[in-house]
Length: 580
Image (cartoon, rainbow, N blue to C red; front, side):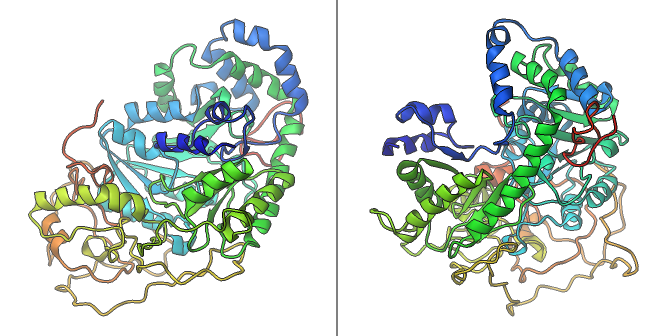
């Protein structure tokens, strides 16, 4: 492909350019797509032929109402229609969830799907970002996440299961426990857009549990599972009051005729769909093994239809992406513009083995110098090292977070040192979780990754050892949770107007003092119960405010289970068989 096609990536801030745009800028043939995470085995060729034969009618006439299409989908899913709202893609549903149900703040682990961070910030909400640590393989600890939510006083919590881009998976019992622990929040959203590709559990979906709870929404995709991103359709499941509130705001014809045609033809193709999911899972295992054989490349465990990989030391993601596209006609998702990630990470969609062999060959030539242009050379060769990726130093600190933090420090009257791209790691106020702008990891780059990275686990990373530092005035620790109890979530607090509490023996630090005080080395600590929502613009323990990410003062508003019919059709989570 021509070199100028890579200029399209410079004009898109949140995602990769569309396949249509790439095709227009090339010689008329698109690249092999390892970027868009859809099912490569469904619809089948016969189904595409059927849709092609119906194309004149599909694009000529109006579709039926959304209620009619939703009723057919609910018949297929064996879900009550009053608990379902169907949208023009998950992004439309996320938009309405934000407008209708997110009042002041939203918490989300990062990195994740960009609309969960960007959409609330576009409407002036505070977004509390909980950083997933590379040292733990980007696994989400729900107890720590719940503690983070309580410390921030956040009113809405989001979990993506599996998470995008890393494919991290949470078992159903843990998600249900989290939902119950957060029963006092305004809303808990479980985004299951990629759950049908998971095979770690037979019935991982929490759609049935969501319908019984007053503040839980489960978001599910159709385009990803059915390999039809262009049709734009997805749905949410909640109790009738929540689902009805969203459904009442959706346009009557928000679903197109292609979506209607696919929904009505699905009941005849359950066996093919189940087989496609099985094949994707097999391909994921094979693809992970092939990529893990590349020296220095780390492949993280995934339950999605994609793999999150860290490039070898010295390789820069945008260079690798551009060269794979121009030299090998391969499109990959470079994750430098995902909050909580960096350009050292790629997300690679699971594809058939013949395509994977082409990808591996391209990576070998680009990474290790077996092509005419030599090996990919890091753009950081001047000495500026990367973070672990959980901090996204190349974007959040050097471009935006520094400016945002400067404004916050000045407003608080504290002499907080301003971060730089290669500065020492920052630690959250009060010695809590590391602030994502520096990830709490040593700089510069950790030791090189071994030549053979084990497939199931991340490449060995040096774990920061406690460093002797001057200790602040001792603060009495909260009463620990009894050891006899299982993993506990912080108990609900009274929000947003808590009752006055007796003053603690040692009052918590004010925001200004928290910025100025020396922070101890990162260590797991217990966070005292929050005394109310944190004001806009004040950073969280281990999180970023919208102000920090966007470089603003944080004070001004932004511009405004089962499938019926054939025994072969899988259940709503993509596993098992449903009785007819």
